[in-house]
Image 1 (cartoon, rainbow, N blue to C red):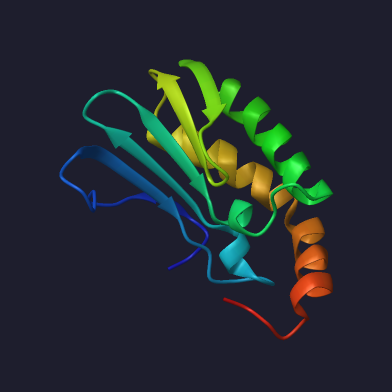
Image 2: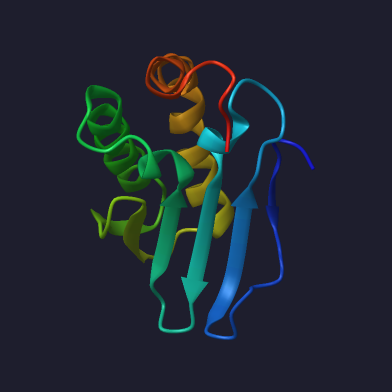
Length: 128
């Protein structure tokens, strides 16, 4: 497993596509995980592991702002709305790979800030 984005068999029969970026390298790689799901009804969902930990704090707010902008810049996207802390609903005709790459780019850009905030909150040795 690496930092690559790859398509995997959907874990749920209601999904037509499933894309993942599950890094195992770097400091706190769990913060850089991204999942993209496409339901048979046409709705895309983008999930970010980092938003489980970073929500209303400055890192979480910056992450949400940048993800909104990044997803809306993907060709074919009509709308992107934060559905819950970790999930964005996306409409339109983008590719799952492009959505996953856009989200991965944002979490990678903020990785240093997230790592520092994680270490401040949970300690350097703590990882999930």
